Length: 198
Image 1: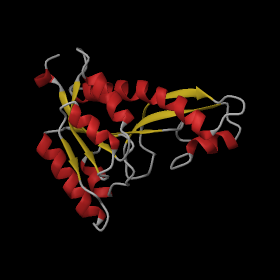
Image 2: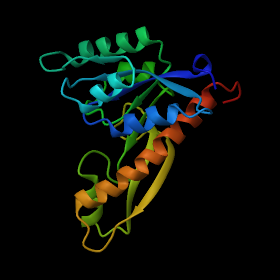
Image 3: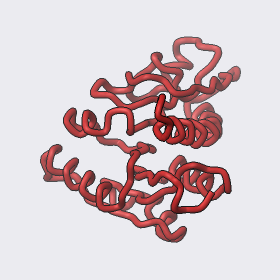
């Protein structure tokens, strides 16, 4: 698929950007319906920024400290609009976005969360799954709504919890699943948004 025919996507990160990298490298496959138009972050130290730049993807970074949430969101959104992106993928973006921002991108913003939602919204998902005696942890891709981690589900992958598992060991295996799931869900969302009956 030629680059011009692909839906432009902005990816928001706060850290190492491994899910962003998975989305980026999936976008290089010939049949992928999206391209990464921008990688944006609230953290100048986010490792994913250097990777994106090395791969030729435009980046934008603006620390949020000392800024009102609405002002920071507005600056991030301005960068998205300038890039031409039509969809936003949150990939380890550790900021809660304001309700007006979320409303403007309703149906066009997705997130990946390291649990089998609706279980374990928020943080410490792997420790909570182990403590509860669950047989599986996992990951979920969902549309972003104003309620944290509660938007409509687009896909899930369960990951077995092994005897004696620690949160770090489980997290490492779940990350493999995240990298498989996110690109597929983003592609389906993008393809669905271009269909008149979606």
